[in-house]
Image 1 (spheres, helix red, strand yellow):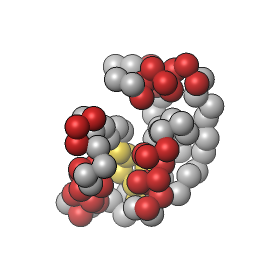
Image 2: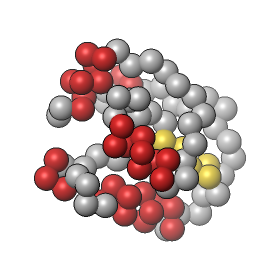
Image 3: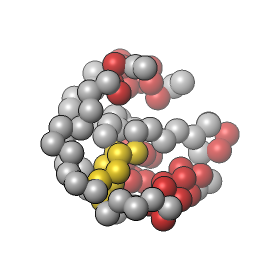
Image 4: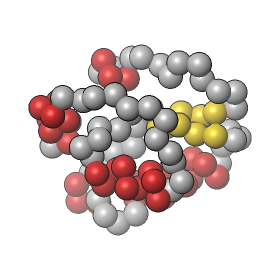
Length: 90
C-alpha cells in the first residue's frame, strides 16, 4: 500500500466512516460515477459522519465534487506539486 494511505486518521470520531479512495477511469470522468459511488456508500452504511482522508489540493475536480456533496475540509497537508501531478496522471 502506498505510504500516503498508511497513516490513519487521528482521534477518529465515533460512528464515522472513512472513504479511503475514490477514483474514476479517465473515460468515465465527468459523468457522475464518483458521486454515485459516494452516495451509495452514504446511503448503505450506518455511519453518521464520513471523512475523505486525503485529496491533493491540485485535484480540483475531486475537491469540487466533495464540496458539492457537503464535505468540509478539516485539515490540509501540503503535497509536493511533482507528487500530485504524478498521481493525477495515472
